Image (cartoon, rainbow, N blue to C red):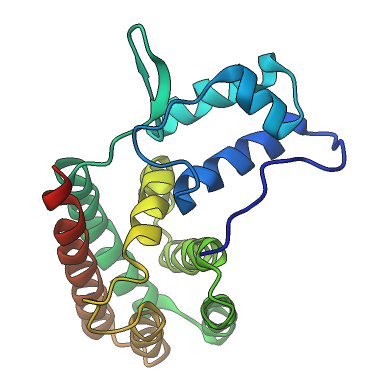
Length: 224
């Protein structure tokens, strides 16, 4: 797994956003492990930003569920438990199955072309073995499905969970127990949408998320 460097080389206009993005990716990729303390001064030096920017980043990531603030200990990388993961997968099952169903129902040629482009981005990231790019590309793939389905409110709900969803995706991407590769799962979903087959699209999402959930359970339950 490749890690995104924390250091910001060129001072951008939106320093806080870049710092936020870098720390978020560092947590999702495992550069910062669950339970690791996040010390303001150290983060400030690694990122090359002020401590006030670091404090903003910590507050934002706490709201996303990636960071916890513990009494007398301060901010740590949130512990990802199976109980939390199971709830996230259950929400995804409800929302993503219906989105895939309606996407397949309404998808026009231009929608299918756009979705195929997103699928190719997942393939490229997989070939490069870049887990963060794969996570980002998968998110764009699903966003397109929700957009075409017209499920804007459902996507807002998914967006609030996206950081933790991305963390789970990164966790399960390379597990040996995976029976079908993530890219192949996405391809099956796309094929059903391309054929305008709502029932099959819904079924492919169900199988994909059911397997991912089982893998996350294998990883997280023994840790607990």
